[in-house]
Image (cartoon, rainbow, N blue to C red; front, side):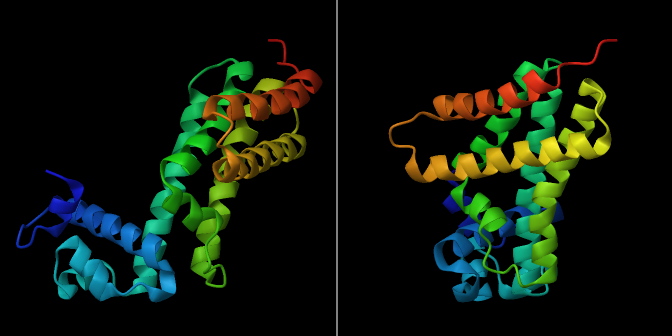
Length: 208
């Protein structure tokens, strides 16, 4: 069964978590195609294959739905970063793994990364808070790792973490727009090499 067929099935009672995931998937498609302002709850319900009352049972309004979808994308990015940090105890491998997490997030779902990094609703406090969390939670995770492994105080570790997150995020978005002549692997390696020579060379792993 295709995703579209599944979304368009009507009259099927699903557990609440599955229904919510179905509605978010439909919303992602409509927001990606139309943008927030042109997207309509009627269309989202139609794509999901549910009635509007069912949609409103889960999300009171379009903004609530948008924020829930945005939060799910932020959670996914932060999870990718944390998994990259946990994937090895070798900092030389952690850097490309972390950079790669941003490249994978950007390349695997363009609609998701645009909502997180290019949202046109930053004037909404809840949206701005979610967007800020994409960076702050990633920075927090990297700061904790650098503090433990390099023996730096938190302020210095956080500055390095901000630099790595910023470098990874901007490089990944640039690569997505101009990557015709460069593979994902090469782009990650170039970015990680720059970060590692700065972090690894200046702040080696603490003894003991």
